[in-house]
Image (cartoon, rainbow, N blue to C red; front, side, top):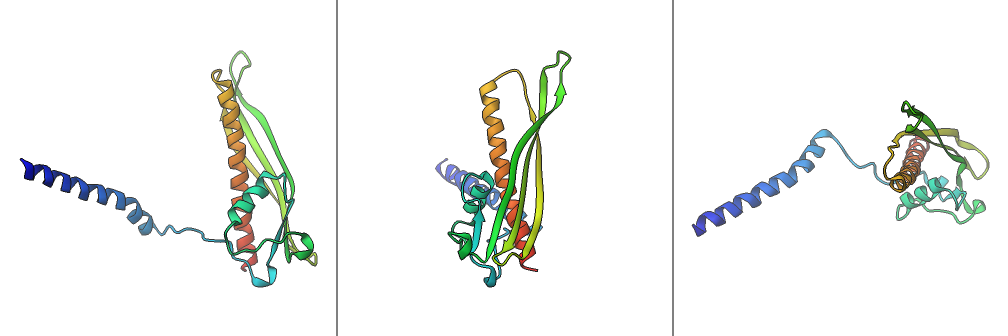
Length: 175
């Protein structure tokens, strides 16, 4: 009986190891790879992020660049490339109501306008607009929870916008 319990535990351990390795093997087989750090030509470093504060998107950009190889300038006069968030805003519109006129769903928008210019004013990325959209259900229950969920969606929008801006910067500068 003791031998069979050990054998069973051993089989479970082997099966557990195989199941843990399966997602890694699947990702490796499909060609997935991490995008990696932002690379920019040496003649365009360091980068200045404008505005420095108050922008959720710029905060997300700064967090994504933290610890990477791209140096950040402390002021525009020390930078060779300036990444600007020129506009950032939120909006929503009703997309569904019930028979009584109660709102059942909203469409949330997060609009970001950005550009990248060199220190001498040469435009590297002309003004681009990102309009991120998500539908947000609005049931009658848990009003406070829905407010927190909406705030979380807008935070996710800022991170997504930062990711898209950095991806665009990467592809444009390395051409």
